[in-house]
Amino acid sequence: MPPLSQPCGTRSAYERHRRNRESACDACRAANLAHTQAWRRAYRELLKLPGVAAEHARVLESCEMPRRHEKAQRVLVRRHREDFRVLLDKELAEHALAAATRPEGR
Ligand SMILES: [Zn+2]
Image (cartoon, rainbow, N blue to C red; front, side, top):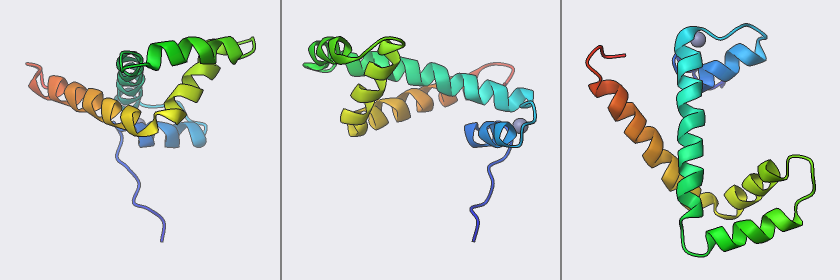
């Protein structure tokens, strides 16, 4: 049975727009942007964990151009999948809370 599809305003729905080669609606674009920003914040937090900054430097050295920073990011996120998941969930939850408590409610 196929999974129920997510409503607009979620990252899954944003990806569905992309898969269907349609331009994403505003709600989905906002959700995707929020997710990207949360991902970046979570990654910065990951680098603050003990030993991770030093590991990042080593991984970066071993990655080849071009886009070695992106390759290093992927390696670190994969190695620290569990920690990263927790950090990302926290960032996403904080963003959801901030959005919910914003005066206009958007
Ligand atoms: Zn949408």
